[in-house]
Length: 175
Image (cartoon, rainbow, N blue to C red):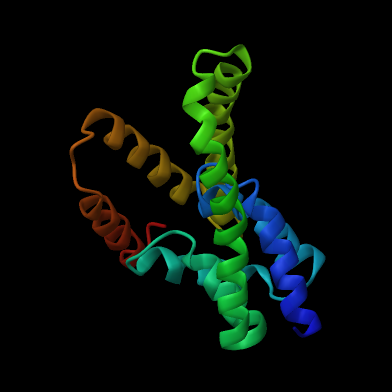
């Protein structure tokens, strides 16, 4: 395995152990590694890859695949995806075989209680990072807050309506 592929594997394998809330929850740390630490890409490229991953159907881990592709081609895409998915999947497989045996244990309840807020905080940090990287101004922040309020008020509203509304505001130059 070449040096760059080994680096991709090690970074994403370590990140996989923090992936509470999925790949989106890890965006700040992924950004720190690939943009700030390794300088494999700049902010704009990172944001573009995230946008492509979110626009495409499929799992959120697609952003990791695209980052690997950007850094080292097809081999980088494969190595990054495997590194992000495999280690924690193996751990979860073995943990959940015994999880029910400890139902009601104080440490188990502490883990379950802590993971929820952790995931919400990580996803919020990811949204903030992407917003800042995309140059989200005051108009964009207002649109984000309005979208949150709409989602809370009408939770059954299909997200495509909100995406279309955001796209329309972008076309009109509001954001």
